[in-house]
Picture 1 (tube, one colour):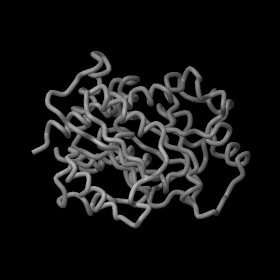
Picture 2 (cartoon, rainbow, N blue to C red):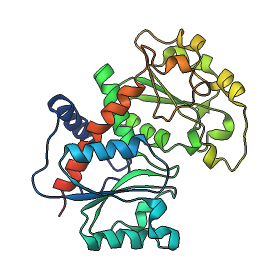
Picture 3 (tube, rainbow, N blue to C red):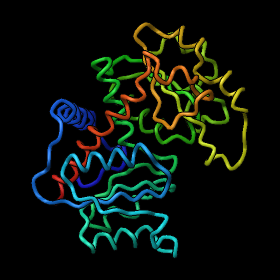
Picture 4 (cartoon, one colour):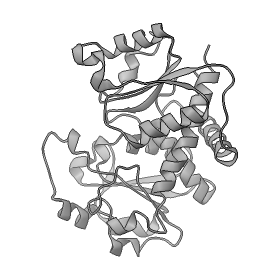
Length: 292
């Protein structure tokens, strides 16, 4: 495997292999890769969890991490992403983790560079490592995916997390339902009433409203959104006995989820963040060891 950019291309077998390897890392800790590899993290959108999680994973694998700050790079002088990538290739970098606001940015890079590309999130397209860590967290809880009912709630049409997870979960045998305002459903079939889906859901995954992708148009106040589409303290009482709460974060307290539920006994939000390190170790290892 030369690149890791989307969940669409992964087979069920490949997904499970990534999860198994991440589980090994979680049980056994640090595992330095033999040989010498250099990676760099190119984040052209804000990130806390994904960027820092990749950096921790890279250090645990003993990789050399070449710093890159988009705000101080030549992209501000008009340099294209392709030319930035070719520059880092010439310097001797082996792999790049890239987050970029353009959907499918990686399509112009693959086949035109010897670097391996790992997608840290592209616009409203894909977020494959987030999907893997979500899958890992769900499997830890339930042991398998077959027949699970996963409810994804929020700004569905703008969410790369929703797209990646829907593709992967369906492939693994789970049932995925979307809950959102009709205006945010995009190509997805959705419901807009909690009463239809809450009590049958094994996983309730909340998404934030991506204001930066709405062009200034706001359908709700924070209060009205929370009342209609947020996971409230009243709604959590109606969840199935073993059902869990997930969120890719950053979360907005009192909007898509009540503040009291962030660290509720049902919440796996911070466990998702923890699991992200092991999943990204598995991805980095697979990509770097598979380089031609």
